Every structure is written in C-alpha cells, then in structure tokens.
Length: 313
Length: 307
Image (cartoon, rainbow over all chains, first blue to last red; front, side, top):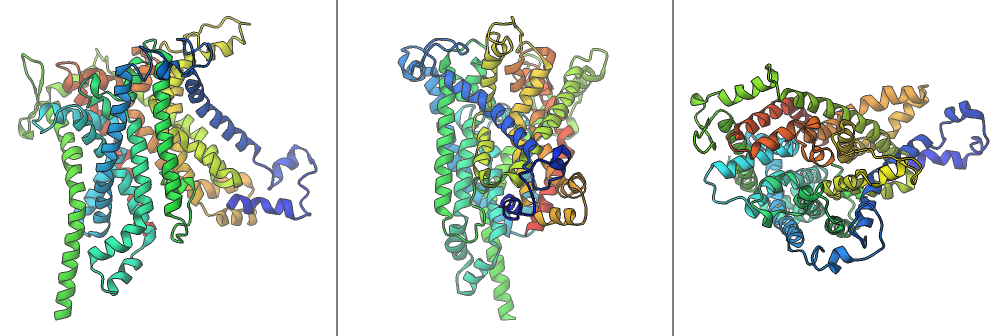
C-alpha cells in the first residue's frame, strides 16, 4: 500500500515530468523514478532461488536414467518403471509414507500443546512462565543439530520408554516445532488485547468460558496457520529425523535424498522430492485459502496477505 | 472485605487455569529440551566403558572428569590440532555466507516491503516458496546442476564451444559457501521483510522533507530504525549454519571443507568418540550462547513494546 501512495504523485501531477529524459544525474535525483536496480536484484534473486528446483522437477519426468541429459517426457520414475519408480520401489514409497506420517502425528501433538502453552504463559504472571518463555525462545534458535544430538543421547543412554524410530522422531520434532504455534498465538493474543475477554467476564462468563467462547474463535486463524506451518516444516525436516531414525524403514524422504544424492541416483529421487514438494505446496495453498476464509470480514485482522499468514517469521 | 476475598479467590482460580494450560508445554520443554542438554554435559564429563567403548554418563557434577573434554581441546589448539582448522573454517564460512546473505536479502526485502506496489503479494509468495521446498531437495537440485556433465558445465562450455570439465563437487570452498547462502537466504529475507514492512513511511518522508538526500535518509533513518531487525535476521541465519553438516556433505563431501557440524556428525555415531561429539556440541553451544540470549532478550523486549 505504501508503495502505491508513493508513486501516485508521478502519475497524477503534471508538474513532475517523469517521462522526459534528463540525463543520468537527473534520473538519479528523480525521487519518483522506478527502483530499477532493486527490481533487477529481486528478479535475479527469484530466478536464482527457484530455477534450480524447477530444473530438478523437470528432470523427474525424464524418460532416461540421466538427471542431466533430457531424453524425453515420461512418467516412468513416478510409476512406469517396475523396479525403480516411486510407486514400485518399496524403499522410496516407505520414505514418502513415513514423511507424511511424521507430519500428521507431529502436527496433531504440537498444535494443541503449543497453543495451550502460549495462552498459559501469556496470562499466568510470575517467574516460572517468564522462564518458560525464555526456554521456548531458546528452543527456537538453538542450532537443530545440537538438539538432535542431545535427544539422541537421551534415547540411547537413558531408559526412556521409547526407542529410536517413529516415536523418538515425533518427540524430537514436537520439541523443535513447539515454538511455532506458541509464537504465532502469543503474537495474535497481543493484537487481540484483553478487552473482549474482560467484556465477556463482566457479562458473567467465567475465565474458562471467556477463553472457550471468545478468545478461542478469535485465535482460530492463528492456530490454523500454525498447524499448516508445522506440517510443512516437519515434512521438510532432516536433522532431527535422521539422528532419531532407527533403520531404513523409518527414514523419511529428506534422509533418502541425503543418502543417495551423491551416489548416482536415478530421476526417481527427483520424482520423490517433487512429490514431497507437491505435498508441502498443497498444504500451504489449502492453508492460505482456509486462512482467508477464517479471517473473512474480521476487522481485527488488518493484514490478510500471505505475509500475515506465514506469521512474518 | 468479602468482595476482595472473592476477587482474590477468583484470580487464584484463574491463575490455576493458566497454570494448567501452560504446564504440559513446560513439562515437555524441560523433559525433552533442558534435560537432554544436561545429558550432553554428563556424557562429555563422564566415563567411557573400557570394553564396549560406549559412553557412561556421570550424573553427579562432583565426580565429573574432564579427560574427554581436554582431549578435544588439545586436538583443537595443541600441536596435533586436527580439529582446529575445521572450527576456524566454520567461523569463516558462516561469517562469509551471512555477509553474502545480507547483501542479497536486504535489497530484496527492502524492495518487496516498500516499493513493490501491486505485485507485492505475488513476489512475497515466491519469496516464501523456498521455505516450503525441502532443504534437501534444494541441495539435490544443485547437485544435479553442478555434476560433471551437469547444466552448469554445459552452460559454461557454451554448447560445446569450449571444453569445461570443472569438478564443482570435489571440495571447493566457494561452492560450499554459496550452497550455504542458497540454503539460508530465505531465512534472512522474511524477518527483514517483516521489519522493513513495519517501518513508518512517514519517518522516511519527514527525513526527505527536512532536506536529507536519498542516501543520507537511508543511512540516518532507515538503517538505525531497523537495526534490531537486521541483527535478528543475521542471528536467525548464522545460528542454524553453525550446526550444518549436510550442505557440506552434499556439495563437497571432502574433509578439505569440513565444518564443526561435520565433526559432530562423524564422531557422534563412532564408538568411543561419542564424548567428542558431545564436546563439539558444547563448544557450539558456548559459542552461540551470547547471540542466542541476545535474540531472546530482544524478542521479549519487542513483545513488551507490542503489548
């Protein structure tokens, strides 16, 4: 919006002759000139960041075994090939199933835990919740490798009631992801303010009732967005799921890519990665559409753009 | 008095509700975040089983022995400093990659947040996209491109005009640093975008009205106002890079470019060397403690301003 108001004088007021050429100095001094350098950098960045991935996706449809020489279009590496395709190769589709399984289980556990945690420490006054907040923020910035190694030590040296594998992976992922819903919900609580809740309590609602019938509906968009973010982030996770996996049967897609990327893989690996990409994009698109529906006509959400949806991390 | 008591009672009960809501999360963090960090300590300062070469954690700090830790420290600074170069390399790579990230991320974020106009939504969606493309897939994409017969060598040979057989994936520092930049720059753009988006346009216009030219308005108004954002964005990129070993493994796989993450990864599953991995983990935690606490403090301060 701000950029639009900035550029309007150039088009409306006849006093600023933007169309005539006044030499490089005049161009440099013109306050309404187009930011061509910045446009150039942005476009170059977008091409650089997305083109390699698009090339990788294109080669997943290659008819031959090469990931570098185009040999015609086919769906061979998705299901055509009887041995190596994602559909027929057990180790590849096990990885995909494991990834989606971890995504769903972790989201189902993380979101309620994180939302309750956020509401709790936001309202509960004292030293303990402050410390818990610091702990949560630390878990957000601690390098993931360190968390993964320490959880690996936890599982291997102490008699915890679970072993390496799906359970350990879920425990690790929940720990690492807990801060997402917590941060998003706390940010939303700050913009809501206390007045709605106080009004409800003045009208006779209990604290629990005000929370359930006033605050929770207002938090729904943030909760929904954080669920989508957690899911999309978990299916892309690599570090935690690798250290906490038990054997090949619990290795998700990212680990599969890591293990085979340098060992002359077939385009089936690209196909597997493409399917994962599709799952993540699908989740995000569904999430964004849902977020728009949930916040429709809600005056407390000033910004309903994709940036607000992503929580502007 | 009675009313005061009821209010007092009610607030105590409410506090009970908030406590009950927060406790599961707190318990989870203590059990699976705080406790494992203590286990790392107990293993580093613990003993090694003489037969099975498995680590034996020692829980009582009074009985801790520093033999494994000093072993690692000796290998870092001593005459047989085999770990030293990797630590130094980590610092250089991370600083270099973060600096390049900033050079890319700041102009892009500035443009999208302040000047993109109607196209902002679309560009923002494209900027966020790498977030939801698996890191491994993005690295795989570069492995494909950089292979000996990959598109990069083909493009450089201009369709067979020259014969280029550069082995990009054979332990080149530049490739690893650029790989880190490619991997982490989205994590820098988004916080910067959020901060620049919140910057009041009126302050910038006031500076221009009061006679500042474009560069001085930028350096004397924009930069100071978004310094906390810049620091936070830099931290959010640097910290995960400190534990990164996979970028290195995929794009170089050579000990010539190994970082501290690679040391952790190589020792953690080797029998008898688990303690060293713990020591490296501790070194990284100590190195990143101040930046982490700075980030936590600035976040809490920003929360207080917001509420």
